[in-house]
Length: 117
Image 1 (tube, helix red, strand yellow):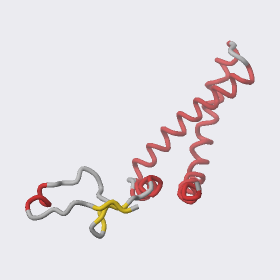
Image 2 (cartoon, helix red, strand yellow; image 1 turned 90 degrees about the horizontal axis):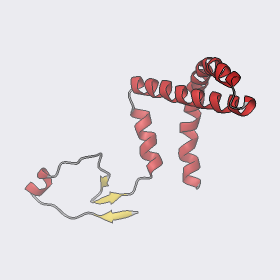
Image 3 (spheres, rainbow, N blue to C red; image 1 turned 180 degrees about the horizontal axis):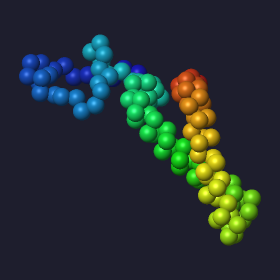
């Protein structure tokens, strides 16, 4: 999809600073699918930020999934409250290690699948 851009001359061009990355190419705005922008952001993201994000995501998912699954198995009991922290401590490092491999696969497949939908 191409959206014509207004022609700017002289000082008008210099005075307009982009607030975000511009997708202005060949005299027109180009539509770039959101998955392409997201994938670009992940590819160029700082490794430190990716590691911190992965730690936070796996922490939250391991906490929630271990709590929910043990609640389903045991019901809302005192036993559930005593088992949940142990299950979380076991689940978190496993989730973190597995995402080291699965995140690369997911970020490769996501744009391909999104293009088909």
